[in-house]
Image 1 (cartoon, helix red, strand yellow):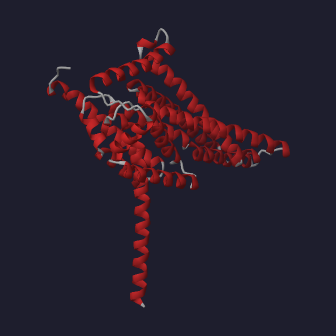
Image 2: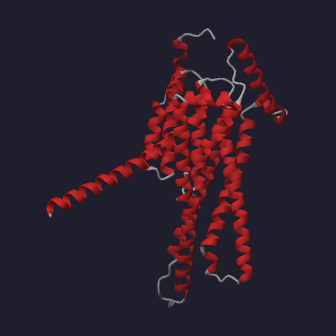
Image 3: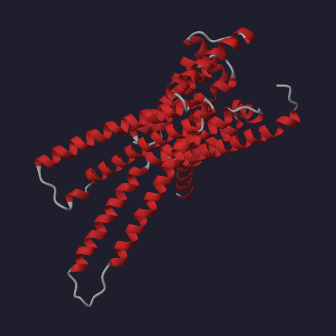
Length: 364
């Protein structure tokens, strides 16, 4: 378009603001994964990456879609981290129930624990409102991300895999609970054990993920008037339009990537600067995934995010353009931030141990 810099200034400032929001979202995800320093490091690394800097400097939609995608993952991580809180809630209910039973045995003139019963009820109401708000927020972020740019389907696919995994866990937990109930009848106290708490947690998580998917579909269609007549055919038309645009760009510019090998080489060069650095990155991601599995960390979702982004990009990426590689940058920075934090803690422990050994030697 024949526009000068003054006419693009507002749009470029908007891109910069969304880039800042994306960096903040990456730091938040790091905190959700218990990577305190790692999340901050990841946000800084994202802000300093050349592809992110270029995306924040141009009047384009890519960084806006990435910002929505990152905050969608913030919502997904919040939903997947609810297990511990729900288990604590069940324990609190058990404590309140015990107090209530004890209060019924007191003399009529003594005070009861009605306040202790009312407080958890209010707390449960607040938690229900918070979860409903987070579910709505997550759905809107997904709809806006996919509505901005279709490569945001990377995070949608990540959430879909997480949802399928949690559905499988829920079914397994239900079968396990059913078999245990057949072996022995649960008492009132045994109904509050960890298997039942896990079942409640998984049920709530699966329900929230399903609600997110349904609301996101309605918001996505509602924000695209061209889809009102035939949503399914409209989505297929969007895919066809992307293919048609790529064909036109190939005629004008050339350089289309026609094989998985070409896409992988282009991705390695754009993200890491070459195949050697990209191979090292893959080894780091593999090690991070192993550590997350060994420690049962929710950070495995970030490794899954990176893996799905890599898979979809080497299947789909049409040209060796920096903006096409943007979906893999956030999980890459998060993993590097987590590994940097782990390496820093290990180095600090070694230095502290050496200092203590030197101090004990000098005293003796």
